[in-house]
Length: 244
Image (cartoon, rainbow, N blue to C red; front, side):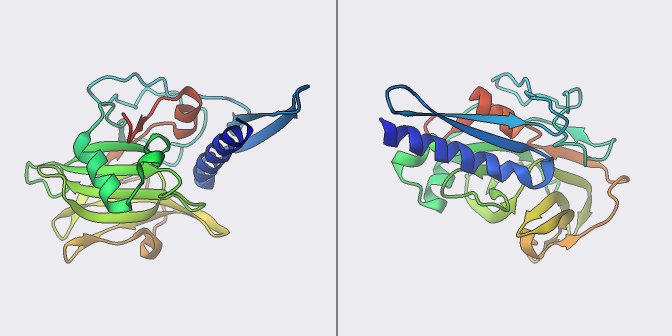
């Protein structure tokens, strides 16, 4: 039992660390020793400014608009004011789960600890949706961010894989080489957090590590996807896993 508790604590700590890069989220972990000699660990998410914040998302069949969300945690402060904000889809998606499991070779014992968020997006405006999938867990996350997959919305095939991804992700109205660009925040490795743009060229998007850093994005128009408060979701167990 003690080993299971320690493993669970490690998973929680690793997951929360992923969120810290650009959001101003700090984490305190407190371990107490009970009278019976076992350890009891408490992980507390402290939002910059001292406010614990929940997204208040409900598990419905449609993604929730995030424009009216309370953003006390600051994780969306970098988004331009005119951007439309949406939450992830809330319905489990077998097509998405199959793609994650196959691409990352995630063993069944890790399915319950691997979380995913996804939104439908039409990147080339051909009236056919792609699926942008953000994945978190032991096999797919690190100090600089987590992983993401871009899937064909019709057959679930993988069009591209990304690393070092932080959410939310802006899908811009402006297109480059026929596809809408993506803007997100890059962090980790001791470098300062910065906004980067992923543009489309020769059938693929720029990878995050090589993406161009950009200055002001105040005039950017588009839709920010996966505007979920990830730290609050962990605290409230409000997320999809590969076991769902």
